[in-house]
Length: 317
Image (cartoon, rainbow, N blue to C red; front, side, top):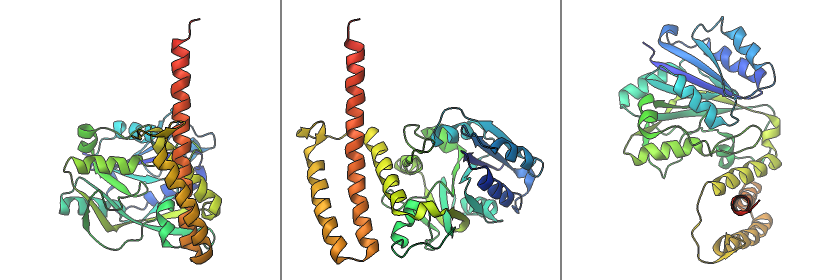
């Protein structure tokens, strides 16, 4: 019997993946009761060699290859390959504590929950700049909340993919991760994990946050630069717009007029914050601009694709 299936999806992070696998060799959970599935999502580095090396240290390790680019595709392959009653997810830049699996099992059994998330501490490659305060931790998948255990609602900040677990039955009942969402190669995007949690909460299933389930998330130097945050926010919001519907009777080039008005007001407010507010609050306000610009770009991209398909299928050759 397999109690827990651990799924790690990886893309061109062989050296970092090796650190994660090393941590998993030290788990206090009995090896015979859990399995590890590493899904290679089209890596072109030495990822497979690293996995083969650790297969001798982790006899419960299985290698899978997902050619369709996208984190959601890779996660779904892992789910379909899993045998455990609980499916736990972490990332190839994460270092789980030695009791990570024990804490997942014990807490999910004690509170009889359907899914959960846990504590994610940062491991900074270089010291963060002064403007990077805790209000930006969510952009880096860091969660240092010690309030819990507690049940979460849709209005709460839901768990991050670096440290989350589900009963496998959730996926058979309510479906897999949305492949239109999530990171694809070097294109930053997200939302697939949040959408999954929201989906099962709407079905009256219970999601908990357990601060005792702990991992450490490595934060590389390039990820604490403002341009990274801007790109992340823009690309994520563009992805949201491309998979959403915006209802409005008044549009300009397909963009709802209210969205253009909100963007203009946000730009004005950002100039005010830049002059009067602390650096962290001023940059957070700027991030809202990038959110709106991402939404607008996503709408324009979707409209272009719609017109292109319409022209292609109606044109008489």
